[in-house]
Amino acid sequence: MTAAISVAGLTRRYRGHRALDDVTVDVEAGSITGLLGRNGAGKTTLMRIVAGQEFASSGSVRVFGASPVENDQVLRRMIFIREDQAYPDVKVGHALRVASWLHPNWNGEVADRLLADFGLPESRAIKKLSRGMRSALGIVIGLAARAEVTMFDEPYAGLDAVARQVFYEWLLAEYVAHPRTLLLSTHLIDEAAGLLERVVVIAAGRVVLDAAADDLRGAATRVSGPALAVDEFTAGRPVWERRRLGSQESVVVAGPLARESSVRT
Amino acid sequence: MSTWINVVRYHLVSRVNYLVLPWGWLAFAFAVDIVIFAFIPVGHHVVPTARGIVQVQDDSGRYAGGMGAIVLVFFAMGVQSVARSLPFALALGVSRRSYYTGTALLAVTLAVGYGLVLAALQAMERATGGWWLATHIFRVPYILDGPWYLTWLTSSVTLALLFAYGMWFGIVYRRWSLPGMLAFIAVQVAILLAAALLITWSHAWPGTGHFFVTLSAAGLTGLLAAATAALLAGGYATVRRATV
Image (cartoon, rainbow over all chains, first blue to last red; front, side):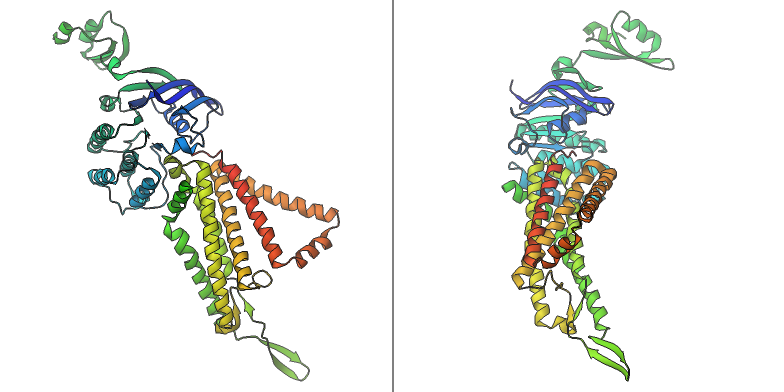
């Protein structure tokens, strides 16, 4: 495995708290990696530091083997679209044109088709766009740029279910047509699960899980139903999470279920 | 180099800000000056004498402050060139260094181009006898009062200076918001105050006055150019650790 992004012992301290605490993670070149975690876990901070937008307190970040900080050689091969991406006061078409100048692999046809699929008018001023439309614009730019390292922070914030589906389909199609290293943060784990080859979970600034998505499938099972039945069924298994609402219960247990038990009624 | 050019093109996407506003604003100020002076008769000073009031024709002309408009616009352009456009440039993989260099390149290019237009307007003003109203809008006594190439040079340097000054303001605001900007202004006032006190204590006011009075327009332009370079260096040092 060759790492496109290599983070070692990365710590970012802000006054009073550690946004990132000794994070060590490698992102394989030519893969789709999901960065999962709750709000405030440190996903955005990690990506900002990898993109050279923020500075590390300690530790090292290497992209293509070199530090990305103020390094044009590395930065011009990267793109990082944030959830709260700020744009200058211009029109959608202008922003796309600027991105096309700065990214040599820019594909105008992909951009046009994405715009059409999202129903995003090129002549609209960016500041007039709704939350979801702004996210869509970020997706268009991030995918059409075909940068070797492409990072999305919560790319579908504000997008409706149909638009999210457009995003997932395009992400896979573009990844196949033009392989690159994709890193996206998300908390819609269920929806994105099918896309991801690798999953990195961070909580309170620390990496708590870093595994291939295939290894994780079946690592846990959710059992729900009448509380008494659920308790009987899950007795003796390690329970990760237990939620109760009235007489109904939902429990997450470790490990896959044996075949005969999954057909038991 | 190509990244710098692309940063320049990135800024110029906001055509209105850089190409339309300065001239629109200047045209407005020009119109205001012309209207005002059109209603004031040329150079008739009334002077009371012992045997009645006489009118004295004054040929030196009148000066208007319309030029101040474009200078202000350059300051504003400098501020927003960083405050609004930096995050998207960094998102697209431009380093702060390239962004700053490209923006400074834009500042110098605009200043030189617009300085030339101002020199041309001054020449027209001279040819028309002050727009047929003995009015000097593009001629500023002592500073912009020489041959066209000196006007070009001095106005270019002045515009670049204002842009660089605004740019530094924009970067300071990006990094430290309003408290930082107020501190930035406070430091500048403190430096001026310290200089004034220093001159007072060393009884150097006559010398200082003499220095500025005898300074030629070209010498002043040199000073302004040095100040521009200092402002650009300050902005560069500040942008290197800016985060978005």
